[in-house]
Figure (cartoon, rainbow, N blue to C red):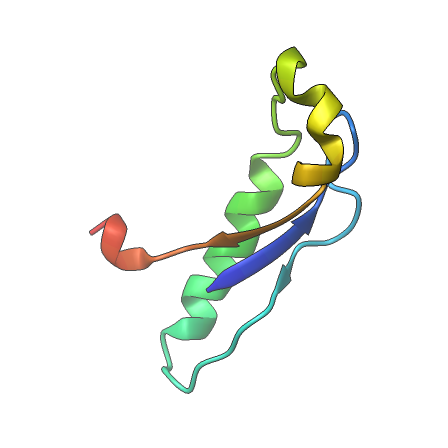
Length: 71
């Protein structure tokens, strides 16, 4: 699944993360729910001070999750 997240300047979620793709694979929903849960658990992200000035570059991010990478 691909998850879109929007962040505040402190690294917290600015809204609910959203899955932006779909699949007919029956396991996709399980993977998508896990990706959303992982995204919420990781909030707030720790943004190093040297990247704060680049907020416009990282305030809206798409994260691609691939279960094959963890198997």
